[in-house]
Picture 1 (cartoon, one colour):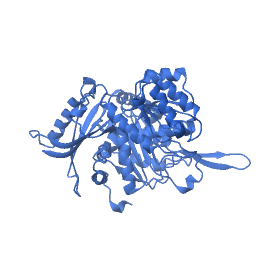
Picture 2 (cartoon, rainbow, N blue to C red):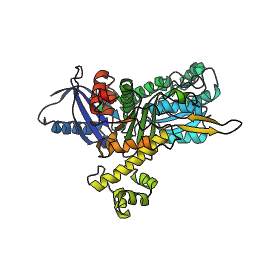
Picture 3 (cartoon, one colour):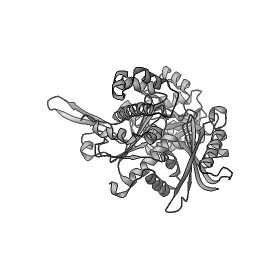
Picture 4 (tube, rainbow, N blue to C red):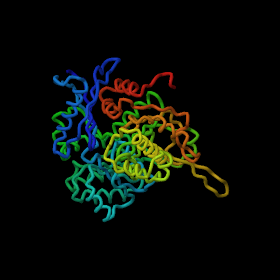
Length: 462
């Protein structure tokens, strides 16, 4: 069978393959999906990829046919995902800008420092062994010393990994000379300053470079070396793919927030410029496209943590369950709930993960008292969001998924910049949002159409 494009989502535990056809027509088709355990730990990612393709063939009733694909693309969070460290000058300025660039590209940030790197910082850096280091610092033609010092100490270290410099443009040549003096010029990637002027963010160029470096270096990770035997297209971090899908969708239907509650983490991707009213009182700039990841909010690996946030007594009362039943569900190794009781338990954890993570992602108001009382806004403004999108296993498969997401609009106590109750709910029913983010690099229009189909979006929903 001929297939235009296969997109593989290589997770830490499961590999999913999605098949797409007729991508150059007005009616692109999502053919189907297959999945299998990820085989990176076995030393060869292709074992899991091939098994997922065989599962897809079974689902499509074409077990005896050969698959002939034009392209295979991939998103990956396997092999530890994209591990990054970020080093800047002032935490609320250059460090924050660099952090936004890394998160938006799909990175997992393992260390953030401001000011000059210390011996302890370097010990942590050596222990983390990140895939990429991002150095920022100073607005253009501003402070120079910190970025020069940090570049020198990193170049002089035993770390042999890519370094992105996105700081003061006035010292770019100096940074280049530092890395050349240690014969590490091949490791260095210079990009435009992530914080060129006070209150100005310029993070998109850095995001692109991060994803390009990731694609090159993921193929060298243990167990991923043979991936190019099957994948002939781009490979990007899975969270970065969800962000790409969210961005192209925003251009089509308006301001949105995408929520992905997973087994270990909850990711929030918002794409919105906010309202003019909030812009007038906003203390610091925020990126239009922002991602946050909450490492303590997952409904499988981290379910005990989420349950403890809610409290056992409250769960007993709300779910009409005994403490023994709740403990049994917390200790269960069943990733996908089957019984109604188990589903209700996971739904309650998912609701908590959604509400806590969106509140952490969103900004809020602060009132200052002095000669004259003044209210200012800080953080990400989500009040202009028209659409709340659910993706990931929990928010595409649980029966109460729409009800859970609708709780966002009514949970605001007035102190947070959350979406309003008027925001509409959309679900990624085919669970293909990350795949379509990857696919959009080749077939943007087809990806948009397939996204709208998966979301069951209709023009009269505006």
